[in-house]
Structures are given as C-alpha cells and as structure tokens.
Image 1 (cartoon, rainbow over the protein chains, first blue to last red):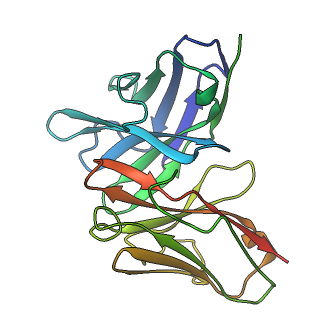
Image 2 (image 1 turned 90 degrees about the horizontal axis):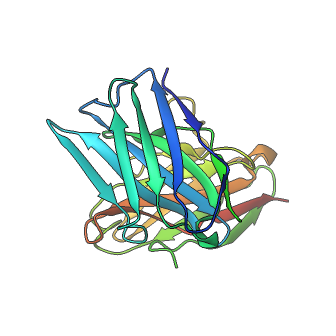
Length: 121
Length: 110
C-alpha cells in the first residue's frame, strides 16, 4: 500500500520560500512508471497542478506556467521522498498543498494528507 | 480561469442520476484521457475515474465516465447523501505541457 506523508511549515512570510516535503512508502521515487506531483487547492484558483518530477533513465521535471521560475521540485532518492520549493510567495499562494503519485496509466491514485499554507507576516 | 470548464454546481435527490460535464479543447480532452476526482470536505482528492471511463478498485459502479470529442461527463446513479462533495475533471494538455483541471462542481444531495 502506497502512502504519502507531507511535512513542512504551515506559515510562510511574504517574499520568503515555501518548502514542503512528501515522504513515500510503498513505492520508490525512482520508479520508472510513476511521476511525483504537487498540487494546491484554493477558493480562488480551484485545484491546480504545480509540477512533477519523474525518473526515466534520468530525472525530468515539468512545471505549470503559473509558477514557472519560482518553483523547484526535487527528488531525494536516499530518503525516498520529494520536495516542493516555491519562492517569493505572496498571499495569492495561500492554499492547501498536496503531493500525489501519478502511476502510468492510472492517474493520480495516491495523495498526501494536505498542508494548509498561510502567507502572512 | 480554468482550462477545463465545469458547471459550478449540480444537485439531485437520493436515488436520482446526476451528470457533471467537463468541456475542453483538442489539446486536452480531445486528445488525452480524462480523469475525475471527488473531494469530500477536509479530505484529499480521491480518484474516481481514470482513462476516461475506468474505475479504480473500490469505487462503486454507480460512478461512470464517458468522453466524446472535446467533452467528458461523469455520471452518478443511485445518488446517496455521501456523494455530496466537489468533483473535478482533469486531463493532460499537449499545448501547455501540463495537467489542467476544471474549476470543480459542487454536488448537493437535496
């Protein structure tokens, strides 16, 4: 059974960096049939895909246009986890953030528990 | 503004059949599979339908998905009170090189 456990601060100051981690159990971040994704959910933007990392003989990342230039998603193979960093946050980045696995052919089948991130000084 | 278009709300009475639509373009729904997610209050999204019409194990057969051209639909038959939730459609967009979602449909069971 795959489980994704999120961790990270729920409060970030404006202009600073949002950092979240997603620990994986029951699968490998290096799986050649999975992609590891970050999403956010907010009243104003709905459910929004932020980006992914995946291993296909080498590492590939894809990011949403809305956050490109501010986002970085990185795998940590020894610890079997992946992380999200979002720079220069503003109140518009306030949302519940989720990590999720995209298993090839099966879509986003496992999700983290969600982390409410507030942007405030 | 979401790339995929869903009605903001839908409703039905217990036992009824409800359909939620999702409209896109040739770059997403027109060329890619559609997925549907259910989000209960306070919970993470749950995969309901993948590959446009496939149910993961554990999802009741009351839920079904279909796709035609650049539109897709989620049907819920035998509506139950526990179906009251937000529903989202999603597809890969070849033009944006990104996953895109609908704005979500809030289903109310009257």
